[in-house]
Amino acid sequence: MLVSAFDFLAALGTLMQMKAPPSAPDSTGHFGRFGGMFVPETLMAPLNELSDEYERARGDGEFQRELDGLLSDYCGRPTPLYHAERWSKLMGGAKVYLKREDLLHTGAHKINNAIGQALLARRLGKRRIIAETGAGQHGVATATVCARFGLDCTVYMGKVDMERQAPNVRRMELLGARVVPVTAGQATLKEAVSEAMRDWTASVETTHYIIGSALGSHPFPMMVRDFHKVIGVEAREQVLRQEGRLPSLLVACVGGGSNAIGLFHPFLEDSDVRMVGVEAGGDGITPKRHAARFQGGKLGVLQGTKTWLLADDDGQIDLTHSVSAGLDYAAVGPEHAFLQELGRVEYTYATDSAALTAFQQLSQIEGIIPALESAHAVAYVAEVAPKLPTEDIIIVNLSGRGDKDMDQACRLLQE
Image (cartoon, rainbow, N blue to C red):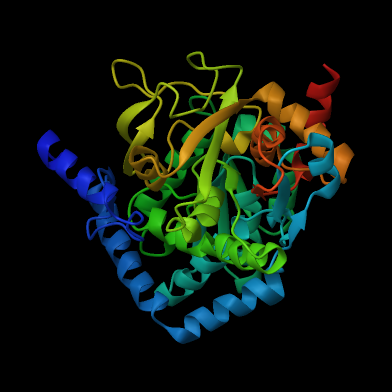
């Protein structure tokens, strides 16, 4: 049920006086007016079961020790905080650091969450795992942890995304996953999520759905955020050790928003730390040719959650576009919508052409090939770093590496 305008403004005023936004959603899964549980009745029981089990797990020292051990010994944490010295000097202005999530096992931050949810599935006695994927990195991470724990794995992926991320399709299949092409609609991430939810609705007794971003019904946005908070916790400790102070600016790309909320969350109480999320500007902010939800989007409900999304005047979900399959989605995670409304985090966008330029620039200057998703954040840093004082420090989350994007990016750069 929607709150009245008076109640909402009163609650917003109270929140604005707080030192930082609340660290968790309320008991109904809402971040302010965003979030919640908008699912068929069939899914209420498994979602409540998952929420209860997660609460038990997060207070279980043995669960945390096993998770920490796997993150370290299997995934490769902590990831470095790397001073991009040559890039910083060429740009002038602020000193830029890269949080190297691209160096994790499977090549992206996605495995932080996949490992955590696989452990939860085991606690729940679920032996079959399903997932959706856009860029393929979450699918690869899910297939990887399923191989590690001996779980059956099915990944839903839009046919368009399968074609532009073919290397990751081959990786998933090699790892033993069944990759199901989705041909409905745009045949991209939104349709893959819909198919995964249909599967889960029909198989809840034996199946756990590992959602890949800070999206969907409660408890997924909170849970995915918590599994990715390690990014920001590490970055905070590392920059204090290396620089003796906190950064001036944090930057991350935002599709659903898992890598960004993982970086941002441990810094929310640090009022001097500015945070910017970079969405997919596509061909520019014209209808159906971008995926920047805060540029002309509206409040609505999509695939389990109330959040900011792209829709037409009749409430029908708009077509989206991005050179990056992982950012090509019509909705943003509800906690990001909440933080944007509070003014704690700023959101902007980078176009396809800017992301491709940044993809090439970082590769040639630092010898680091970023994922096209991460290249959106890199593009924003390339724009703002030269304008900032030399004493400023920027941390940009390099959420994944660009191996998966080589064929597509090189073709587009040649064109």
